[in-house]
Length: 464
Image 1 (cartoon, helix red, strand yellow):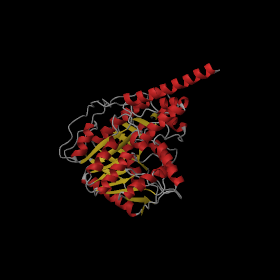
Image 2 (spheres, one colour):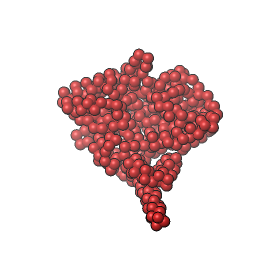
Image 3 (cartoon, rainbow, N blue to C red):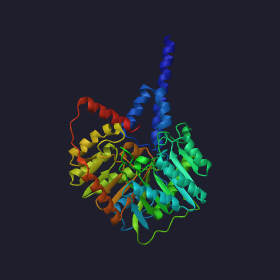
Image 4 (cartoon, helix red, strand yellow):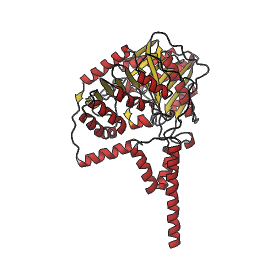
């Protein structure tokens, strides 16, 4: 019996050591920088529950597939004198396609404008139409978009629809199969049951984009569901932000979609390729300056997080942020607090109550810390799903990325940077109108049980 117990203990120790070794090697070799709470959670799990934690790590643990040191075909010197030099140099160093001038940019005032722009973008396609969404709902919006996609197929357009498998769990499979039968190419991004060597179920594609012929882009924070566009009885549409870009930025989004499409097929690409049949548009001499900035496991750097960190230290007058969920990592939170203390006016707008209760609990520590540093925190009475950040009068970001650890470090996300004065004024006025309707946040010291609850939810939130 003693010998059996010793052998059993030795076997358990070997499994623990093996689990820790796999964790260390996977983390170091693949440059998997982690949030401290996530790293601590994995290590403790390997020690205490190795038989459960090791399979979970193999399924969910890797968050980066691309490695540093690559050179993309678009690596060029940043444009001189256009946009803030610190941002151009930083993004060029992370191999982000450079800012380009575009023929036309439209920012949508509300859901009705956004829907008109979406349907017009689909209707404008003549050769290729790419659609990527996190949620594709079986409701009025889903049906309108489905009809528009089928109309594009009937006029000879090659239509590709990419939906996230988890985000669209409630989408009836029959809806996607019906589209596929009628000519729409459909792929689901990382289904729950798939080969783990072809991707991690925990890494979701949260990008929202529609690209027509590589020339016209519709993007932002809106999913393809009613709540993002239309008022319904007793359920007003969520406040959200989307836009259209006519010009070379649409070509960059088209390239990004091509990479996502191949990843959904199970091919872990190391570089983004330009489709041979869809050349990038030449940039006009005069036009609105914008830049496509993607972030996620297919990029070696956490590009948007790095840009926000750099912006916190380069800002001189203001940082304005709008987000539905505010659970940043400690580095970004500290950077914004330091910006407050050196005289930068930091303003944050979040919904008074979002559609995710756990996110509301997890954000409280960060809100209290930011308010204590001198930031102005505002609570919107409506459900706010928009994502935007303004830094001084030089740069504005809008797109799919929430200011939480999942969006910053795990999800496939996409933001567009706007540098033109017209777009900056529009977004600044839009933020001011939303803040005028909000109430100021009042920080209160939590009770001990509440403080413990916030800590637990915040620690788990990075992996959920």
